[in-house]
Image 1: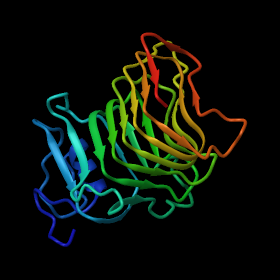
Image 2 (image 1 turned 120 degrees about the vertical axis):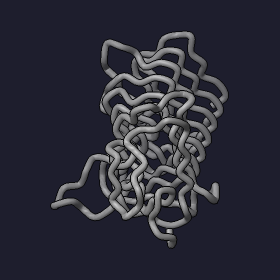
Image 3 (image 1 turned 45 degrees about the vertical axis):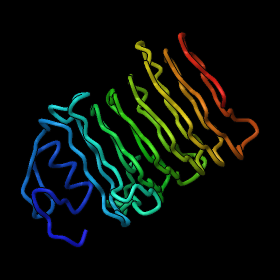
Image 4 (image 1 turned 180 degrees about the vertical axis):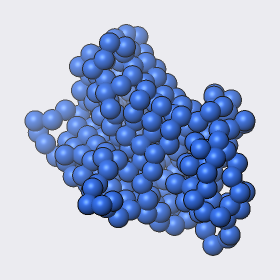
Length: 237
């Protein structure tokens, strides 16, 4: 973070997101976007980043051209993303919103909310999203660590993450006509969460090896799957 902005060094998540989506930089570095023509990895320097941002659909992204944000130290306690100041007395309903984007991954980052609302909001059919080895902390038990706008999604992976202090850990509503598909929720820890895992209208779901500790509301559900079709695997939680 102490080095000058350049074609290969971004000073903020927002600047990287704007370059990916629009070919614009909010720092003084040379732009590379819009879009990608190969796999892209952002190695995030240690520090606390006070900002909120949206990533929209990235042209050129695919299973072969995946975009990854990861802590360079591989230590989620050293890369912390937290809310920026309130915008004109309005608090957005997210810390990070992924809208229409596909093939994006976050690894080894702490996402911490200081205001009510979603920590991560998946919207407009965002799909092929991966979260691995991250920490999520919502503001209170009326908030979600990971939520959606009730749209369809597919091939999302939530693996080895730590969810804490929220009303919902993973909260995927999807009351639509097209069922979510191929979600993997593996080996996560949920601590002091009212509703750890809520997945609605999904098939080929895999929920395995998760630890759920300290449910804060006896009327809530550790795992709630109202409409899940086979083949699905719910095992060793």
